[in-house]
Length: 341
Image 1 (cartoon, rainbow, N blue to C red):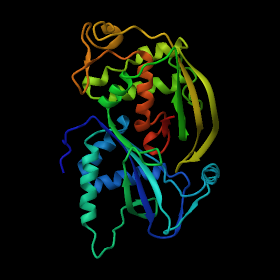
Image 2: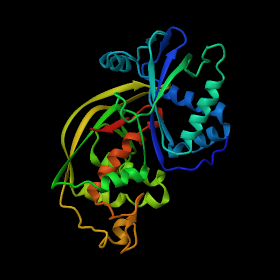
Image 3: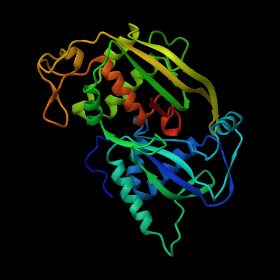
Image 4: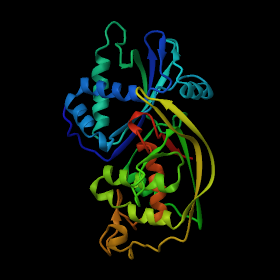
């Protein structure tokens, strides 16, 4: 199966509904196990792609969630804090969330599913994936943006840019993020590394958005990579153009296979304060600010030119992008799942 399928600028967020084959128990936070299980599934379907994903781990071309249980959230969070294994019931359905950040991955996944489904015999489904010691059957793959879970969808980098470019922002623009799985930032001060790194446990703007800007540049197609200017985003935050307005956060911890990890969960509201730079298709920002030659406007999708995005539009763009790429540390292993409210 070829890895050179076109359309690399698409983003996908999928929910896989699974049913355990037998009774048993599993770690309450299994992001590390799901990550390994997903790579193994890809390896069986297309070994060359699995090698690319593994070798390119620093680019983080996908994210995986922990196994999601059909249990009250309070019980699951308590089990995560206490590292108490949770039971599996073959009569119930469990889910994992998978996001694909490289367009070639979705056709691979789709074609591999078709091959997998054709292997059914006598009306019996073969096992789909092994997470830890537990084997699961695949019941359904959900991708519709209208799914009631609120965690599925698909888009493109160009569509995200067009959507944000059409927004008319007031003097003060609100922005709220919901951090649904354990989130933290493996942080080292850019001013002095004397004290080394630490795990930052608050979603301060300077922790969240410069990292998203780096991810955008790494993953966006070349013609859109310059839409976001990390230096402008950082300067806007440093000058307190963006401030925390409200929050409902709590510290949390989970257990990975070899070590505990501490972070936070909850919601945080930000205020994006104006004024914006004045930009029009005829008078865009200069090269040093926008990344585009002076006098040139960006054309995305349609025929109408789009003026370079203001810094506030860029931050809103990154907030929507975070739905697919996650934020912070170990997003391929279940951490940093976030959505804009």
